[in-house]
Length: 146
Image 1 (cartoon, rainbow, N blue to C red):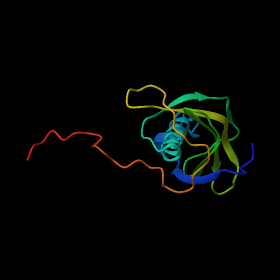
Image 2 (image 1 turned 30 degrees about the vertical axis):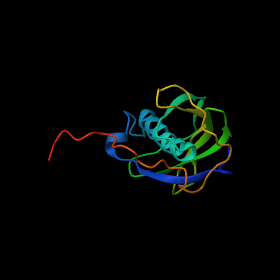
Image 3 (image 1 turned 120 degrees about the horizontal axis):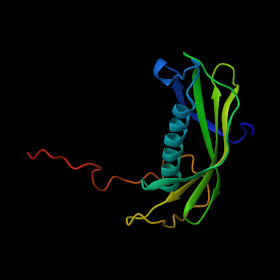
Image 4 (image 1 turned 45 degrees about the vertical axis):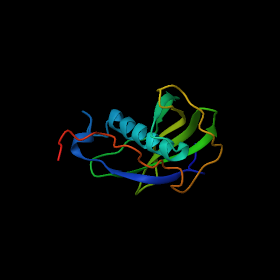
């Protein structure tokens, strides 16, 4: 997969706590970062904070990163389903532009208030924040009364 059509927005610094026994970037850390980035992307594209990861295709670890490397993660929507969003992802080294990881297919499902798949009504990518839902109620209620 090439980088055509992918916008790289999120950057991470490979730190000691991100390393595996080989002193390279732990794949689990990288997958956690990708899943979080994909969830945020889906929220922006679908205009709903209630989205869940449904599927990830084969994950291709093409290279590694080491302590001190800066990496960037990119995603792009490839298909809008009735209740889902499919995207592809790439992670690359900022300095060398070498691809570290590619995932051809990540699927997120849009959920309604009842926690079940719900139609989202979108079929094109937005490059703006126009779909971000307004906060109607706080995510966490305060336990302190004034």
